Image (cartoon, rainbow, N blue to C red; front, side, top):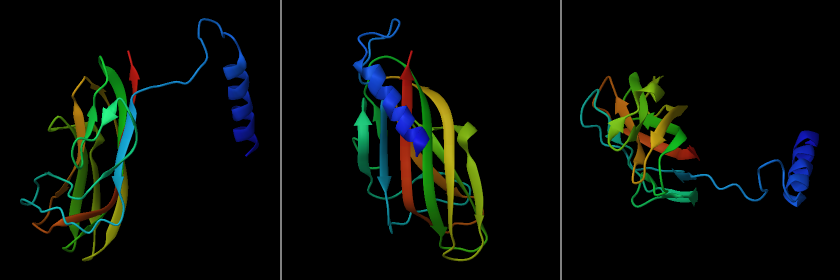
Length: 172
C-alpha cells in the first residue's frame, strides 16, 4: 500500500510540473481495449477434433481507446498507423467430454498467433480449467483479434464460461 501511495504522489508531482525534460505532462492515451464475459453457458460447437473455432458467447466491451467491438468476440484496432501490441486473454473452459486436451489461441485477422498457444487437459466431464495467453504483435488500422479454442482429442464441445480478451498497444 505504501508503494501505491508513493507512486500516486509521484504522478501528482509530475502532472503539476510545467515540463519534464522534453515531455509535456498530461494523460497518456495509448491504444487499448478489452472485451469480456462471465457466466457464459453457450457451448462453442466443435467442428471436429483438432480444429480451432471462434469462442461462442456474447461479449461486452470494457474500456476501449482506439479499439472498437463491432461484433461479439472481436476487438478491432481503429487508430491511425501501425502499433505494437501486447495481446492477451484469460479464460475458463469446460468440456462436455472426458480426458479432453484443449488448446486456445488468439487469432489476428483470421490467422493464428501461434506463439501464444496454450494447452490443458480436462480430465472429467464438466471439469473447468483456466489459463492465460500472452503474445506480442503488430496491428495496423482495421486489424482485429479474436479468441479461438480447439478440442484436440474428441468432438466434444467446449464452453468458455468466463473470458477477457485485451490489447494494450504502443504506437511507433
